[in-house]
Length: 190
Image 1: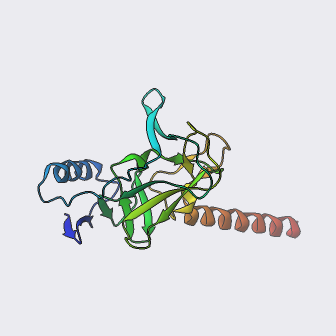
Image 2: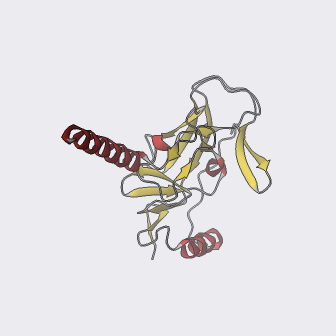
């Protein structure tokens, strides 16, 4: 089901259809002595996780930060071959699953942070401020900046736009364009 390579787990046969297996594997590795030590959290981590609403947590800035500040660095615990609701896509075949604070950064089409992959380690992500951020401000990034095909698409509450990954969005746009062309052809015939 999963194999260890270079100090991290690769779950090559798990996908969003088997969340119970993923959670069991995740719990097992958390207790296992085989688990590689986690990369130490930055001493100056500027993320605080708090409840935003009942049963809904989010990441917030601990203090005001100028644009370009690295607020948090985290290393993935598991690499999956397919996306899940909780992964961040590294490339088409590698979807990173995190257990720390990074998983509480939510989506916005007007983001204040971006996820930058570390040049030295393919499994590490830096949360970087895109603009000046105020103390206590929720940290949000655009899911389309990392996801080509989302396992759990949804509608953005702020804009009403679908959040489905850039591949699905491109397909939907192409389909709409094709339908519009067909409608124009039908009108021209009549």
